[in-house]
Length: 306
Image (cartoon, rainbow, N blue to C red):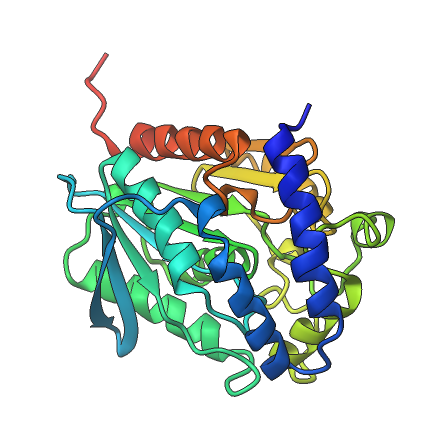
């Protein structure tokens, strides 16, 4: 049963975000509308001491995200969502800071190129470049976790697919929040929940998708990793809301990963919207972030023999 806080947030998102986004007819007005989301500070609750430190890896701008708390050797390489077109650094920085603090890891957020200025394959190339740069700098793969939400979840998988096919080592694990994995929009939930999703309407999703694809084949595995061969990928944790149009992307991915004998942990959260762990005031968000942190610690901390 969803909490009263999540029910209140859903009503607020439907009124403040979905209705506003639905009136946008290009990415530029979407960016202005989405800026309103960064003002929901009471729901986001960033950790104290949150700080971002600019860097550049593989020629791509990035930000180290820290709360000033001690961290071990583990790194969470985070690929933010935003439909491949948008950026909300305050919101995603708050989530990454909290996740890093709880998992005793350092957070690194990639500032990949955005559509429509840089459609596919700009973001795909940038994320792989950062992954390679971390390895080249001596990052131990067993101490590295890839995480991402929405479009960022898509980019996590495309980064892993390219790394696998190029013979690069896999990270310890990956965490996906409401990933957008099927640019052909073949999941039933995209239509069955199109009137219930508190965050997006179908038109908004298609607007961002088309800006990113720029005419490219939506079934290309490096655009829609749901259609890729998924063998030899790292253990994967998935969190998705039961109210969101992208629900089936996570459910279908989990089924395909299991068939490929990849360890997977999927939770479909009743009554929750798209990427609900961003809103840390929700008790469901706190539980999800705690579980993600436990998952990260489990796969990045050394395990005693026997």
